[in-house]
Length: 278
Image (cartoon, rainbow, N blue to C red; front, side, top):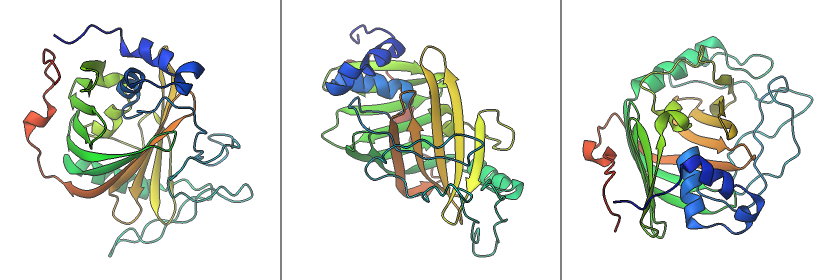
């Protein structure tokens, strides 16, 4: 049997305290990961600022985190995002609105593309709030299933089986379980999305590189999380996402070598609730 552990949400609140951020432990890393998808760092750091136009969020003067997402710098006197270029070899992208928001045609294009992707495999690179860089392999099967296998020396792996998210720490011999419905991961793993009508979508924006979707959600007893998803402006492919926790710390995940609609082995998404980790 797994060692008994208090709920992930209670451990996360302790992990996010100033003292815990200055003295991170593996347990805190795993607990934070369970509640915020792939937020593995408890170390203090300046949060990266990624801001939509002024009517959505007021600009804040924050220092960018290392290896920040390649988004345009903010220009107070002009729209935050520029006009998008071609959407593909034979499809011309619709022009952005004056405030940088993507037109409905672009929103529908990204929605339709992501709904057509039912499985995905590839590699990922994760940048923690303190600049720590982690890599590994990712396997996704909609709805609700994903596996993140982190390269050594990280002892952590994350598995979602459609209902729960398990974060296993082989070094500590522990396993944290969080309902999938309580994590930002559920947006990425939904069988179908509608970016035009989902109440959690705070805005969809575009420039010449990315279609950027901002999702915000209030989590009981924890605060507001923000999920920024970046799609390729030309192909609509999922490229990157950034999770901002209630304390303002960002974790960035970038995909590479992606293959879509190549169905992974279903055994990859099995959570063994009784297994003793080795």
